[in-house]
Image 1 (cartoon, helix red, strand yellow):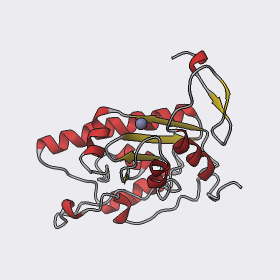
Image 2 (cartoon, protein in one colour):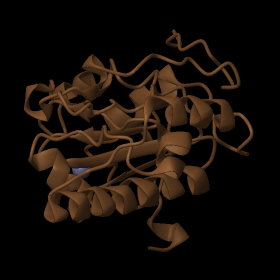
Image 3 (cartoon, protein in one colour):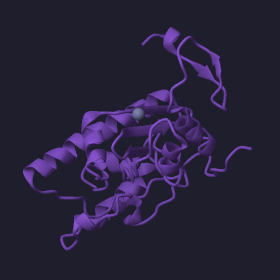
Length: 208
Ligand SMILES: [Zn+2]
């Protein structure tokens, strides 16, 4: 891809510049920009392992890796919506205010941040974490971080440059919990909801 492949659109999705067509998923991008004034870069992709979890109906909601907990919290799974239709954006809408990375059922992943580089790195983190989670499934066991360790990671979030995720911590998979009764939307059972006071632009009102 070169700069000449880029298409410039206004906030209504109307093409201003560029020789290619506007993406059919522009509605999703515009919704995120409208709902999250702090966001200035969005990456949407279909990486194979994370999309595999999305196709299996599994959120990435276990606290298995400390830096993922710090950077992204839990990564929920939005229900399926047909690409290129308003249905797709509607499935993401309830999750956008709190999460910086969302799995899209039977489709892919979207990540976003204060610039394109950080959105891209979040996409890399999601796929990296999906591969690690897959390995734990192959090995047949997972040893999630303990509640008290999660508390320390929440406290550490504000010390990491560029980490402003308000996402709740991942679900703690207690020994007595049956992961199969998880709702497809992982936010249904967060350990606790930590709104991060360090996030810029905490109001998520739509622009008129
Ligand atoms: Zn797509």
